[in-house]
Length: 100
Image (cartoon, rainbow, N blue to C red; front, side):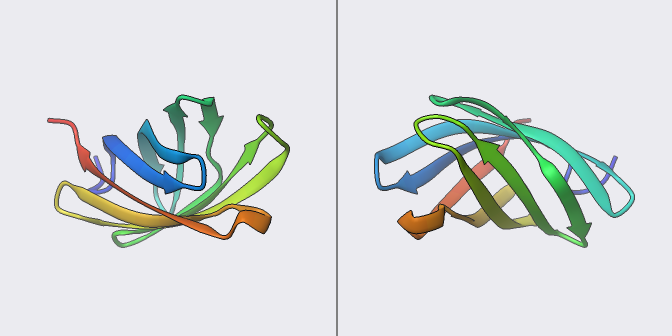
């Protein structure tokens, strides 16, 4: 199991207020799959890449409007900190803690 793998309880600071969710990471070499499941439903990781503790990926959101979210994060120990690019809405920061 890679150091980035796991389920993280996350909070994203968005224009619609704080969005809580669970970000799941399952890596395979320099790629990863996963989901971000929260109040807006579950979004699948697309084109997930792993570089040490750094993750980059995209997610295709359909609600409340179609949008491609471009995301990056850094995993340090059991903490994850990152940003999601929300198209015209700018960037949202998020952070979380890996579940034991």
